[in-house]
Structures are given as structure tokens and as C-alpha cells.
Image (cartoon, rainbow, N blue to C red; front, side):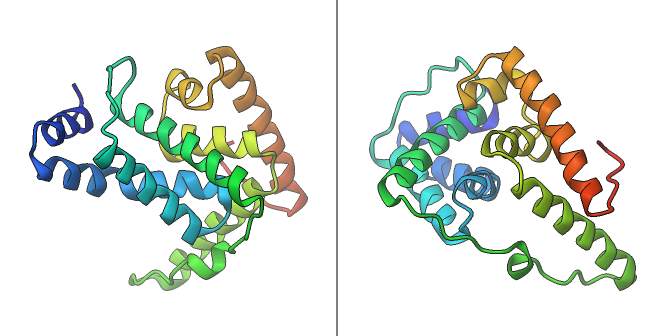
Length: 184
């Protein structure tokens, strides 16, 4: 059992520290994943809170068919899709307004790195929703193709094809802006 599963099990047995550990370990990554759907950091935060409220109140059973993180992100995805269906509007917030100036000795180099990240995220946001999701889960959250398939309710082969096409589209989008990202 991974740490998330053991923390959740402890919570179900009455140890509130288990839930605190889950929130601490998974909140930020889950919120960024959800933000890829809603494009509104405040709505993403609300949906993320809703995931943990569901765990705390409804206490769904974790069967261990996947990693705890995969199971948790699938719950997040489903709750977010319900939220989108209910609200039917998407308010976008730019990455520039969320980013902070790095405080390091070499400010110029850190600024350039941040600028590249912003350009990468902007290019990703121009892609189809499925491409955004598969890139985020695979590269930013380090999910395997099997785990990504479970979260997105697709086969492993479909995920491999989506990743291939998403990388290809991302590369074209970046080249339009005269940018070359070395990891593509």
C-alpha cells in the first residue's frame, strides 16, 4: 500500500491525521490538474476541496485496483466534470497572474526559465482538452500510461496515441511562436 492508501485507511479507522496527510500530500497537484479543466484557479481550489470533503464525509471505499493517487485523481476528474456541467461557463485566469518572481541569486536566468515555462503552459492551453490532460498527467504528475488511462477512462493504447499526437501538436504550437523546447 502506498502512503496515500495507508493515510486514508488510518482516517477511516478514526485517525484524523490521516486526512491531514492526504490534503498536505495531494492538494496542490490535484488542484493544478483540475485547473487544466476549468482554467480558473479559484474554481479548481473549490473542486479540490470538494474531493477531500467527499473523502471525509462519504468515505468511498478504496479497493486498491490502482494506486491511491490514481484513484484520487479519478475522483477529482469526475467531480470537476460535474462542476463544469453544472456551471456551463469557464472563466480563464492567465498564468502570468499566478506566477511569482523567483527569488534567487541569478534573477535573469531564473526569469528566462520561468518565461519558458509560461510559454510552454500557454502553448499547452491552446491544445485540445484531451491533449492538455494527457500531457499534464504524464509529464507534470508523472503518472504512467496505465494510470493516466484509468484516470481518463481510456485504454493504454489510446493514451499512447494521445501522447504522441499531443507532443506533436505541442511542438507545432511552440514552433509557431519561435520556441523550441528541448524535451519534446
